[in-house]
Length: 174
Image 1: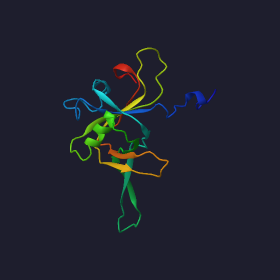
Image 2 (image 1 turned 135 degrees about the vertical axis):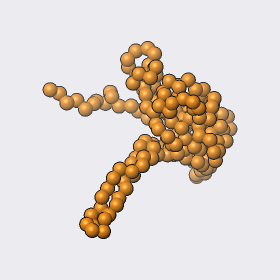
Image 3 (image 1 turned 180 degrees about the vertical axis):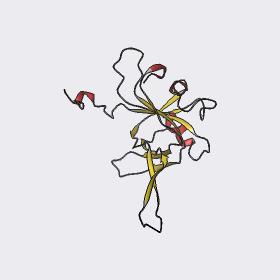
Image 4 (image 1 turned 120 degrees about the horizontal axis):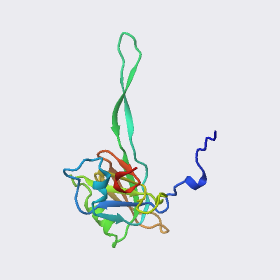
C-alpha cells in the first residue's frame, strides 16, 4: 500500500492568483451564505496589480475558566474568526478595481470578495478555478511610500465578516 502525500505536480503556485470584489451588489440579500452558485452569479471586477494577499481562514479562540477549588484551568472552544486579508497593491490611476476598493474604505456595508487560485481544475471542460468567496469590510486603505526604487502601494485590510466558501467546480459540485 502506497501512502503518497503529493508531488511537485500537485502544488499550486501563488503566481496567477486573482482577487475580485463584487461590482453588482454590496452583499448577497435573500441568498444562503453557503451557496457557491449564487456567489458565482455576481458581477465581479478584478483588483489589478496585487502583490500579496496575506493569510485568511478560520481560527478558534480558546476560552478558559479556573475554579477556585481546583486551580486547574478548564478550556473550551470559543468563537471563530475567519481572519483578515492584508492586500499590498501597486497604486495606479487606471485600475477600476483598486479605485472601487479604496472607495469602500470605511463603508458600513459588507462587500462580496473572491480569491481565485491559478490552477484551473483537471476534470474536463466546465471546471472553474479553485476559489474562495466571502463577505468582508474594507477597514483601511493606506498609501505606502518606499524608497526611490519602490513603487507607490496601497495597503488594504479586509476583515472577513462571515463564512468562507471554498469551491472548485461548476454547479456547486466540490
